[in-house]
Image 1 (cartoon, rainbow, N blue to C red):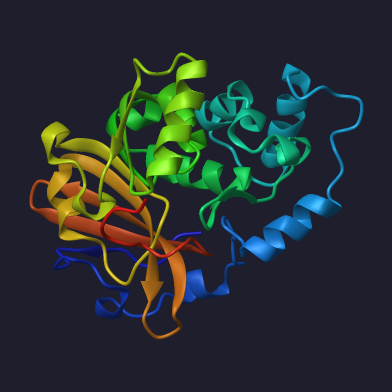
Image 2: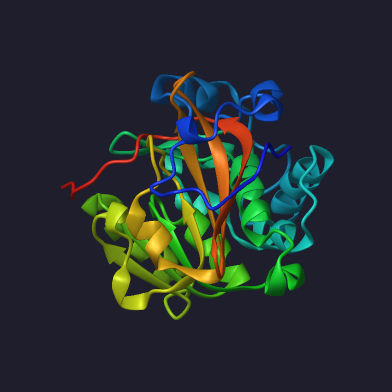
Length: 273
């Protein structure tokens, strides 16, 4: 569901530089992070997967089967979703809804994104270029650790994951959860300002962001390796809605494409308590 591509755009990239994409405008809105009131309401309405314990491999397999039926096709992404226990990344009171395709609140004004949207972004990140055809990523920079679920998925797909979170309580919780799954050797968690990226480990073969602003921070583009790919939500100035943008860095510049409409939390700078 891609829109028009563009080579040689000047950065930071803003969508008012390339105009509105009709293909993206017609696609349904993906809501990876619904308003908290809606997320709470959805949680109260959903039913636990019938007859299946949350620690059962079957309950994850059923979720993956539903996502595949909805159009998620990348085998490596499906395998990652099948292997990571999502219920361990949400509060115990909401754990029975962990394998429904819904966002859930994780505290501090944030939510864990829908599995379908996480899967779609990972599918775009893997794409079809170079080593991505094998379903394997090199070093990945994740902007917005949140509860750590996407970092755990990335750990199944990448050689190394560097994940940044600006909210200290979420950073600490994610560290505990990833440690319990023994993923510390594959995931490095950083408490810091995601808009600055993380220069010490740059360049990155892949960058993925869980928050969107009006422009992609120049630091992200600078830290993207030649041959690398970035996936992030970005605001359309005319409509003030967000769309997924894919940016590929080539030896002589950047190329971008516009995909589905989404609704992520706003991208913010600085640190939070």
